Image 1 (tube, rainbow, N blue to C red):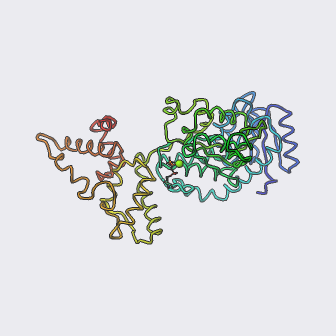
Image 2 (image 1 turned 90 degrees about the horizontal axis):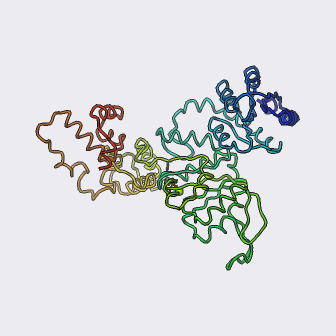
Image 3 (image 1 turned 90 degrees about the vertical axis):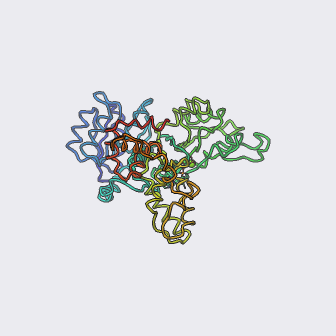
Length: 462
Ligand SMILES: Nc1ncnc2c1ncn2[C@@H]1O[C@H](COP(=O)(O)OP(=O)(O)OP(=O)(O)O)[C@@H](O)[C@H]1O
Ligand SMILES: [Mg+2]
């Protein structure tokens, strides 16, 4: 499809808006239909072969979101640009989650709309080309350098896909080493801003008193030591994305200023009255739970609401044991190449150790463990002694032999129940890891947990 042959459906109940958009788009060479109500839009859409719908969220007879859902149901490949009035941004974000290409706030100029239309149609073409390939890859084991096939990671990939192209603020929450930065990269490099800078600021690493001037810049003489004018990082991020890493470590005194900048979309350098427009997409990360950070007075709740339009929770590695193996293989390959050592596999016993470890340092810790093991391995296989989890003298299971003496008067079922409970305790409640250790598939473990009425959370708490 040549762009200019594209058919566009404009849905807006304000005739002025609809007509001027139609006229502008037609001048660009597109074929345009307009609808003033949801019902009319649906009727036109069902008959016409529209490639793109530009849809107002507030329609007289129905919710624009419903129209959009209809469009996506009938012909999912159709792109939708959502137009939203003041105060309905949250709903627009919902629309992008439901598959809208982009949302634009009213009032807008045609100069704003035109490139979006181009890009939406380009993306449509691209998707048509890659659709067949994509269909074959329904579960992804890798996505933008992120390794992981677990259900939790699939959900994260889908979220990234659906929010990357909007300008919605994203907050990434997860323990240290879970891959928050990789996720931030995937968002930026998947966004319409991917060719523009991606600036990262670690709020924990910068001295408190420097953060403000680093972010917003200062004028010469604004404070002692300000020998020359300085551009802030928000300026460097213009047109691109800004990542505020460890946002809960940003000084609380500075948080209202950041909030104002986000609300007013403009900022001032320290020592200057001049305001500059900001144009960056904000991605924040934190390894504290926001609720805790707010309770402890580290994070202002008003800022939190602003930065967390979309929140991505990255689960710790121990909760997605199925990724442990994939990541192990990945790092094994990576480090055996890097160090030119012919290590090709991991023994069953070593895998059992990897599955039962609780990974407080998450993927970063696993990466370090495998790097070290590649260097230590004496054969082409990684063995338990190459792993750092104990002094290496005895296999983990063997030390516990005394505990496994069979108490009298126990049935086989009693024993099975006890073994399952002990194993779950050992894996900190991780069922995948427990199933691996027990040598059974997870569904089977689930059915046994049900059968014996095992309360996993109480096992872990004790
Ligand atoms: N899913 C993954 N696939 C491949 N590598 C990963 C994955 N998750 C994390 N890593 C690797 O682990 C290391 C830590 O990842 P990253 O810096 O993204 O974590 P983080 O959550 O930002 O950590 P921190 O909270 O300490 O800043 C990096 O070397 C990264 O490449
Ligand atoms: Mg990080």
